[in-house]
Image 1: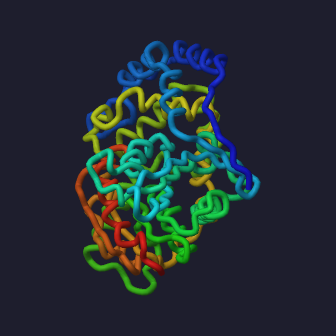
Image 2: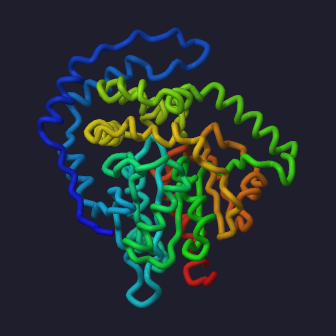
Image 3: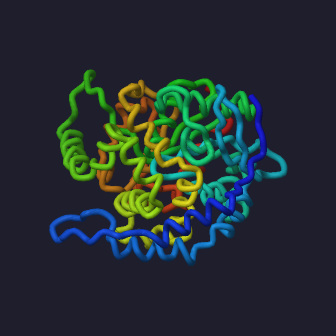
Amino acid sequence: MSTERFHISVPGHVLDDLRERLVRTRFTTATNAARRPAGVDPGELRELVAYWADGFDWRAAEARLNAYPHFRAEVDGRKVHFVHMRGKGPDRGPAPLPLVLSHGWPSSFVEMLRIAELLTDPGAHGEDPADAFDVVIPSLPGFAFSEPPSGPFTRRAVARTWHALMTDVLGYPRFGAEGGDIGGGVTQWLGALFPNEVAGVLVTSSVVPTDFGAAPPTPEEQRFLDALAVYDAADGGYSAIMSTRPDTVAAALIDSPAGLLAWIVDKYRDWSDCGGDVATRWDRDTLLTVATLYWTTGSIGTSFREYHDWPHDRPVPPITVPGAVTLSNEAAFRGMPRGLAERTFTDLRQWHTPERGGHFMAHEEPEQLARDLRDFFRPLRKQDR
């Protein structure tokens, strides 16, 4: 398995084409949304598009991203992009614990960069250097600079890829894992499949079991499941079309940067813990950095693969490695009973419901999540399983 340094360098003609498309954008009129949200507000979208065309500096954003150590490795014949940041632990003491961070949709490795700084160099942020991690941030298959999978995109298959990346490519015999959304499912599968190599797993979402054969839901659990079903019915339009007609919607989004931006920002607004004002959690430059990555890599369609291939996935079996949850405060998971997580994690050692930070927890509340990761993994660093 070969590894190579990677440098982000978008050709000038791609950026020129992007700007030409942006300045020619046609905007829709707002739906009467007095009773419920109807999606991204056309006026807000117009302002973002105008800034993307004539205010946003991609070359500056590109330079900031390239300040991190990027690599690509061939795993099972497919290129996987990842950021690999070495930890700065004490001069004398145990080596930093390797930790793989997995993002979800419509996210990217960008979401994880701030928390990676906190995790790799805790001493520089007033924390104990003994809590340092070696951090690996892969791009999911078909996202950004990672090639799409050759077979179905399942969370189980991605976990096998991450395991090969961490052990065979990077040479780590033991490591921890964290993730949310799709990345949370990948993280759970890492714990389920590889208990000898995975020290522990922390997730911020994706902990709702699907099999209640052993014991029916308790009244508290059923109330949450009923509320989740109501939420999904109101929010699930994006998922339904990405699951059943991904190529149709991708044809529109890969041709229109404004449409792509609307598709992404709609989820950043709804799923962030922002009270409907995405600007309270995401500055414009970060939003447009993510959107430009999707646009310039042409990866919006391939990012839908996990939704379309969902029938190929399986329920996660019981996870015996130490587990932790820092529960997202997004509407889908708010108020989830601990008992539901304990149906999946047989050794749930940490349960935190901070009531702040949404779907993109690593970006929204990096200090909070970094603290939970340090607390959870501290007793596991030297523990033999």
